[in-house]
Structure formats: structure tokens, C-alpha cells
Length: 65
Image 1 (cartoon, rainbow, N blue to C red):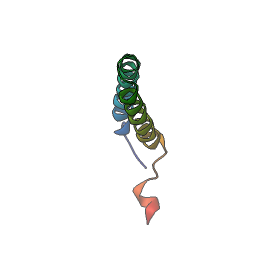
Image 2: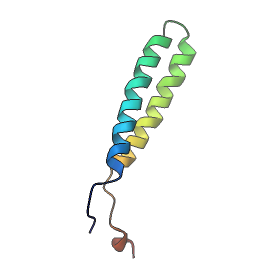
Image 3: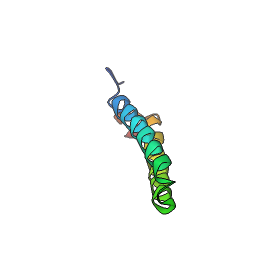
């Protein structure tokens, strides 16, 4: 059984914050270069996938044996 704070919690927060920054960047880019804005949107999608992975329940190591 795990004790203490989940080390993924601060990483989830950082990922969430980075997503907000990328959203603002994509919004600013859309008026300058649509292709660049679309690239940032794809980066946000990958970042969301990482956040989702960090949110998944992690089984204890003992359960893997």
C-alpha cells in the first residue's frame, strides 16, 4: 500500500498549467499563422494524453507480481 503524497500530483498540476499556456499561445498564433496555431493545438492534444496517463490509477508494485 502506498503512503504519502502521490508524486504524480505536482506533475498533473504542471501539465495542466502548461496546457493553459499553450491555449493562450495557440490563440495568439491563429491571427499570425494558422499552421503554427494548428501545431500548438496538436501539442495540446499530446499534453492532454500525458495528463490523462498521470490521472490513471497506478496499481501497487506488489500487485504486478
